[in-house]
Image (cartoon, rainbow, N blue to C red):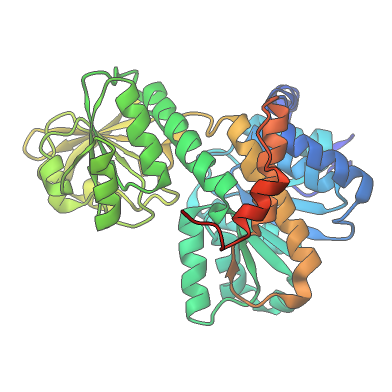
Length: 424
């Protein structure tokens, strides 16, 4: 395929395509549920004639999702949902090997990031796929003339769901959204096991520190925070959890973690990981309390959980120590280390979630789009959780691929559960 025959694109290096293709194939080995969906989509073509605009992390796992949608008949245009998460070889492979329009460059600046989103919007999608809701927000702010033709969208992240529910509450959301993040086969596994492993992987790759013996402070005890805290403890760290929710704080306590305020934890923590979906979790008041050598990492979607701007303004200077580590020199002589510029450390410093867990998340994406198309006429302009039947089907396929069998109810047991008359 000559360059003139390629679809519209903006990627860093097309010569990386062969390496990217090999890595996409390697990830596919661990994605048996998506494989089954892709095979059915190839036969049935449920997405025929549909244009999909996707703003996702451009990784090997995402590539397999895009190829499943393409095999289902969709025309997909893809841009990055984070400036540092794009795997350039994957972007190149999608363009040259699979004729997918990709607008994504690793380490792209903010202007390029939004230009890529606009290029995706210019595709005039019928369906949007988001990881953080930047695509939806851009359409609502700048391309409202496209809204009447948009059937619906999907959202992958906790942060994005929060934004979209806020839009719906203000009657500002102009089409229905399927909150993939709310599916059990997404947040119970992707957020907990995926984030737990990949975030620590990113921190270790970035710093080469030994977690054993360190004090790790986890901000937020949602599903991501649970995974982070559990895995850090498993690697020998002392874990402190900070929370604003009484129930989650109580749960963390019952799970055996020490719960403190961030102000208290700041004085003893060695490594801080934010996973809250909120801004300024670590800011000026906390910077003053951190001990010399403290490391700051973010695992929330946006780069505002750590107030990097204030850190820049109040430091005497900074320098790059390692590829993903910046040393900030505070005016009192302390040194603070920021990982991956405060962006998603698991994708900026490592490879993101393992393919086997993304298999379920992206199965929800694919089936979520199919569900939107099948139910479009009955949907309101709100955020929906996908039906439990989809969750259970994905779980069934995953267990089947893992060669795991479960029990089934007998007729007597089913009648018993459906009756109120039984008792002591």
